Image (cartoon, rainbow, N blue to C red):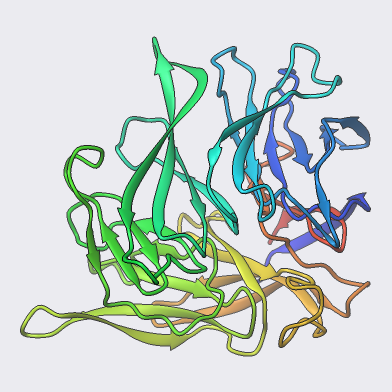
Length: 366
């Protein structure tokens, strides 16, 4: 039986990223998206954070990653975008209803979007941007003192491609090699994380070769069938397709990836999450369409929009609909959506930003 969902409008703002965290320290989760934060629990009170650079239909704001950057006990957040060529963090002030100061983290080049993964197991995630046109694969590590953030980041380049090559559109992180470490996945291969990720060289394995012009961020690294080897789940962020890839090793030890279609008939699967949303103890694939990903100029952009979850059956995925329908009546999920238990119900709700507005989908259970 599929879950029931209740859609609630928050704002007509067209920022494509949203995050959920307790902004004002009252014990209630709030929604942060673009230039505003929306006070929980009903998200009706809207507070200005600061201006966000606009570029046509876009804003230079492609992630909302919560982190106490300066160690003051208040959650700040990290963002960046295609035009600013840098990552930035917004500082949560003592009075969060006042404008939030913005700080540069460092130069990156064009950022498709950004995710956070704890690469070295220190308990504080590193910030990893997808910069498709850049040769360097770099991340940003928060500098700490006494276990608290100092407000500064160290930029670490783990690999640099030869002249004429670039990392490409698409980014994932997880254990591919089977050594229990956090490898970095790109569209044409993966970088093997060494035992000492900041002191030893990372090894490039060019065995993936995904024929995707715009692979999802993230590409999920998960063990679907419980055999101890991780599979990949990849969406096409700028065209049709959602696929999982099964790793296979030849007798000579050569790794290859066998594709299995999940949903070849829908487009713009740009953001993916792997989370237990129905409470059965097993994660589901949660994703949906990024409405007007390239402003109406790609295959599938004018199709109906939707948000879905897919249950793993042991052999493949069963699709369930959260929302689906014509543009203007239904909803997509932007470039960086959020899952959180907004009401203390024990169920994960979904916050969906995008060029089609900002909404909450309350998970009403079975």
